[in-house]
Length: 288
Ligand code: NDP
Image (cartoon, rainbow, N blue to C red):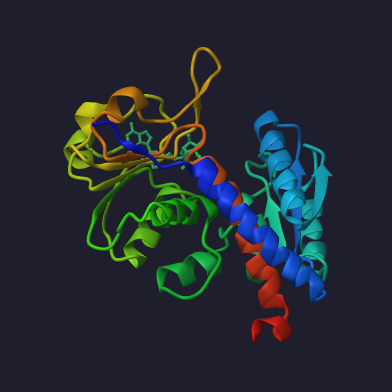
C-alpha cells in the first residue's frame, strides 16, 4: 500500500492561518511583531528564499524589513547593521540569510545577533538551551519537521529516529529535538558505512544531505516514516529531494514530498519564532 503523504504545504498553510489570527490579536493590543532580514549580495537562491520570507510576513501581518547589502560589504559593516537591529524596538527577530561572502565570518555574525532576536535559532545560546531542554528558539527546519509529524499524529517517543546529515542547521539540531521528544536517535554522515545498514533500522528516517537519489526503497524498512529535507535540482531543473520518492513511497507508511514537504514548514516556523520573540519582548502580554 502506498505511503500517506505528509502534506507540509497544507500543514504550513493551516499554521499560517493560526499565526495570522494571533498577530491580529497582538496588533489590537499594540504589539506588531517585526522581522528584519539581511540579504548580502545577489545569490539567486538566497534572493528567492528571502522574497518568500517577506511574502509570508505580509500574509500574516508581521512587519518586515529587508536590508540589502552589497557582496563587497565588510564584516564590520554587517556587524554594525546587526547591532543596530538588536537595538531597534520595532524589530523582534533578525535573520541573516546564509551563505555570506567569504570575507565575513558567519559564526561572528550569528553570535552578534541578540539571542532573544535569533529567530533562526542558530545562536550558540539558543542551541545550548535546546541541548539542556530549556525554552529557546528552535532552528526552523528541525522544528518544522517535529511540527509536521505532530500534525499527522505520528508518535515520536520510543521510536528509533535515524538522521542522515549532521549540519549545524538541520542534522544536529534535528537529532537534539528528536531526543528531547524521547526518541532514540542515531546520526549518520558521509563517513557512515554502510549507510543502508543504519537507514534500514529507522522507524523515522530524516534525510538531510543534498544528494538526489541517495535513499532508495532498498534502504528503508517496510512501514518507515520518511522525511526528506534535501533540495536538489535534477537535470530538468526540477526540485527533488534526497529520497527516490516513487519507489520509497510504495514501501514507507508516511512520506514527505519535495517540493511541498519540509520547505513550507521551515518557512512557517520562522513566523512562529518571530511572534514568540515579539511576545517575549513585551512583559505586559507575556503574563496574560
Ligand atoms: P550540509 O551540506 O551542510 O550537510 C550535509 C550533510 O550530509 C553533512 O553532514 C554530510 O556529512 C552529509 N553527507 C554528505 N554526503 C553523504 C553521504 N553520501 N552519506 C551520508 N551523509 C552524507 O547541508 P544542509 O544540512 O545545510 O542541507 C542538507 C540538504 O537539505 C540540502 O539539500 C539543503 O538544500 C536542504 N535544506 C532544506 C531545507 C528545507 O527547508 N527544506 C532547509 C535547509 C536545508 P559530513 O558532515 O560528514 O560532511
